[in-house]
Length: 222
Image 1: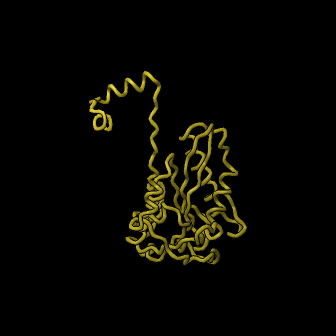
Image 2: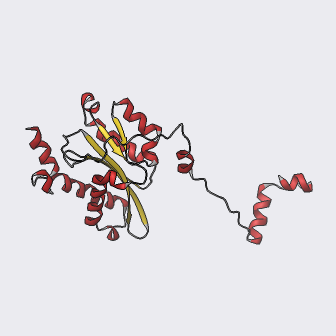
Image 3: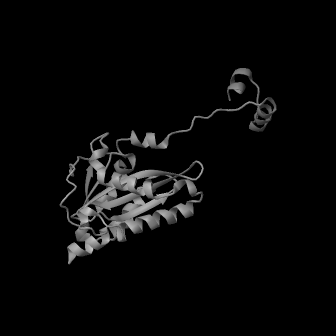
């Protein structure tokens, strides 16, 4: 358009492409960071107070869930992203989702799994705590919580200790997965599922009277 305006020469895109190819000319394009754009849009993103305030102990089942996302580096330069929801009363991973993309749907899918396990009455008594990441400040995530009557709590900015329980689980699972030996996403997904099942149903914890989380849940219900 500038060539036509300034020099009165009309050139179609195919001719420009041929000239670029002939002389090895490369057009550099700046990619838009859609997540940064979203995070700057106040209408779509909003933070909440830290209602949990590190009160991690002496909680009942389905009273407080902690959620976060972690990156899993596997194989040769491959990346996957794991979102989990952890019940702070039973230490159980009540929902998880693994994806090759860290998009908004990553967390929302795991949230749907967690919420759908609960009755409407239990949902209204639940608090879900997270950090201030864009997945948790996004209006779709906040709307899902609001529609189910769930209280939203958030860590203080830049304070990972406020969400320590779920960070502890991420440390555990990374210690137990042989990520370098895995070159296939489906294999990684199977490994993650198996490890979460082991954590929930077989691995005893000192703080749960030496029971695995699922057994402890049944114990406190009886």
